[in-house]
Image (cartoon, helix red, strand yellow):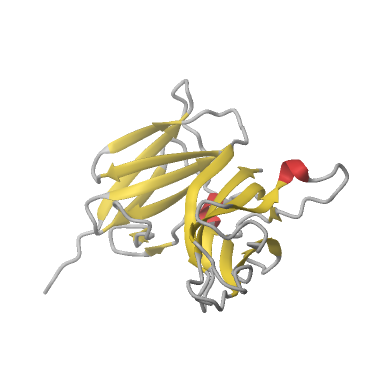
Length: 237
């Protein structure tokens, strides 16, 4: 009979003075070196534990504690607008993570979230900002793309990508045009908050806990259909 061994992982989250932080920490556990969430457990007998873990309230000096059957995991902590990545965490050792207790909202830049093929209407949208990156809500301040494969022919302005939140509210669209955005290296603007007039409602506000996705909503019917890479900047609230 095979006996499953559940390994204990433990981290203390502390402020700059070494005091244990007892609440307000969210965390996600990933398979080491992967973007896939790991399966974790609440105890040594394999009771299921939700991952990501949100709305944590720690017992004094208990910290983050979970069990897994793998020997190495990656952990992402979220606290007061900060995101801390801890790679290759092993079991059996007490780890201490120091975070800044002063809340701040930083601009997060995704260097590349996805390259879309304008000739393929995907059945499922692509996640551009995961829900784990949005614990309290966010505002997209800049969404743009640049063309990596030229679009040719009369239909070169047809490759449209729509970016939406999890509730399917359209946040912005990326639309090439015959006049300009159809050659390799051309810029396509989806949204730039700095261009929004004072008094106008922010259209790119995403509710807490929701992901942001994108999908080709109008394909380019000519060949080659063209491709473009999408980039994002956003502020966590």
